Length: 125
Image (cartoon, rainbow, N blue to C red; front, side, top):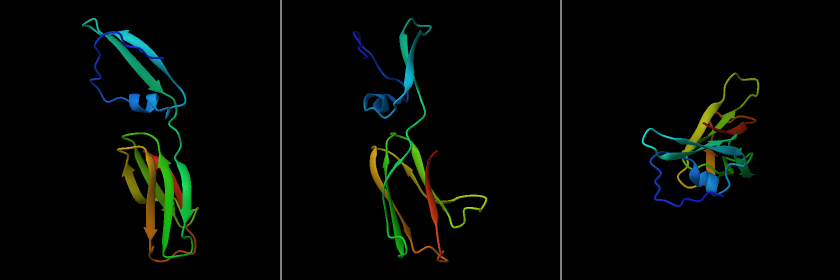
């Protein structure tokens, strides 16, 4: 439980939204006192949660739609693909910067040339 009994502010970019809404399932808090005598509460998050793939439709058609859930406000998620798993690198299909965590869909429309197969992954940058 976090309780503040005096005026407080959040002057920096923090993950407190993600802590409050249960995005991070592990991590720890530390406290320190800065030079002005102010108490600082710091949170160090554990590993971020993996994207949750919720749907994959349209395989074998002109448009593949990939649905997934984002969880970290401000994070960048990237949908990548490759037509051959032995290829050295993944190509970028789309990059999404999350303003509000929740469901997202990405379309792969009419890939050219049309591959016989395509593999996808979602990574957090």
